[in-house]
Image 1 (tube, rainbow, N blue to C red):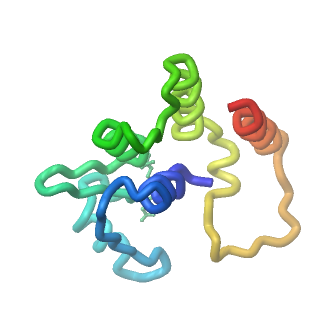
Image 2: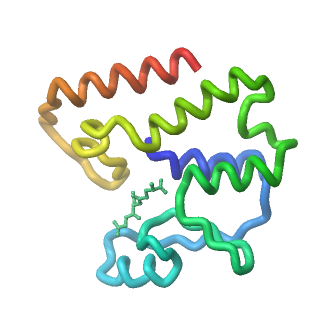
Length: 133
Ligand SMILES: N[C@@H](CCC(=O)N[C@@H](CS)C(=O)NCC(=O)O)C(=O)O
């Protein structure tokens, strides 16, 4: 699961922010152009708040957490928060083999997937993070 989904769920489920959602379909010829019109990095997700443009999912999570502490997006306990941030950072920037081999794509059906030892190790790691957080 990409962290974008988590951002989406945080915004949607906890209703922390009134927002307008702009969907860009990934299987269209003008996708790059559409994304670049919204995001300086050419990547999504991107959040716009007036003149403020935040184009990274973890930074968007922090933006929401700072403005809406009542939503409890991070744990209240400082040590638990440290662990949650480490887990989020690892999911955000680590697990390279898993990301490369199995990027999130709900519209893709794969058969006979041959997973490498590195991918299996990343799956064990992410499972461990989720079970122990
Ligand atoms: N570190 C960034 C990664 C963003 C990223 O890689 N986005 C991809 C979608 S998964 C993207 O926008 N790709 C543009 C494209 O494929 O045209 C974040 O978490 O916000």
